[in-house]
Image 1 (cartoon, rainbow, N blue to C red):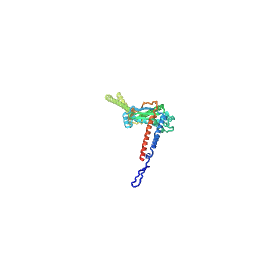
Image 2: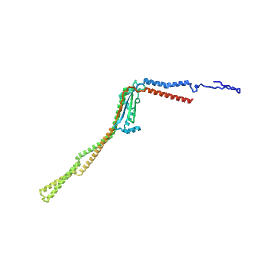
Image 3: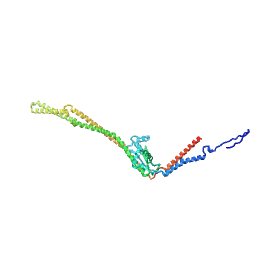
Image 4: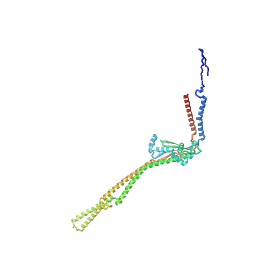
Length: 400
């Protein structure tokens, strides 16, 4: 508090008092205390977490070794044009290897692959080993879902739709174990591709094989019907039998006509009781009897023994069976040709795994990347602390 000058033109005295506060109290806290809190926040928010990260990555984190493999799914007929369209649009084209590549990429991170690898190399026991640091270790009581999540952190995949190349990297805590896992993953992937190719081939041929089976059954049924007809009618080929009978009757009729002509000629010069004329008449009677017997044989029904339309009925049945057998044979031949074409198409669409990069035993650990991780953490902590400090000061300035 200070005293001012006295003014007394009218004999009165006025005292002007000016009250002032310390400059540090204007902001609510003394500057020294603010700086102290700022440094404390820097220590707790940046220095201590960064020191913990340095300690973990420098002395605690377990080395992880990586093994890589690269391959591509190829086919005899790949349909490169369709694959290019799929690569540009992001959609897998039908009948191309792109869809199979997406399936394999998903399989590499699947539970099915993990369980197959775990059954062969006891992956869970290695990942839950007490020798592994607590942050990289899988809990012994972890569920299958937790195991899959942990596996997805230990494997990384890359897929280039334009070239169809797939690469993956697996990590473990020893070089040999990492290589063993990568080799097994490669074998399992090859098995999957072979199964996909076999399934596609089986699906492509199944319809054609069913058609062949149906046409074969139809042909067998037609042949069985023909055998039954021959057994019941006691005739191998009614058409041929009828043709032979007709030829025989025609021959007998020709001979009969010739004999009758000779009889007519001899009657003009010989008596009716002439021996030669009697012999010719007897020959003519015998030929007429044979013609009548042949005609009766053609018109008789072997099953019923009656004369009628037996031969026309047999011929009609036989022709119907012959037509059915011919159609069945044509359909069967067409089905066989379709099956062969489908087999050739399926052979051209077979898939196989073209491996260009096989896993090798690592000589040095690549994970964790200590320096990079420490720098990233330091940058993140500094950025977060700086942004938080700026926000705090901005809010306080608006409130005061």
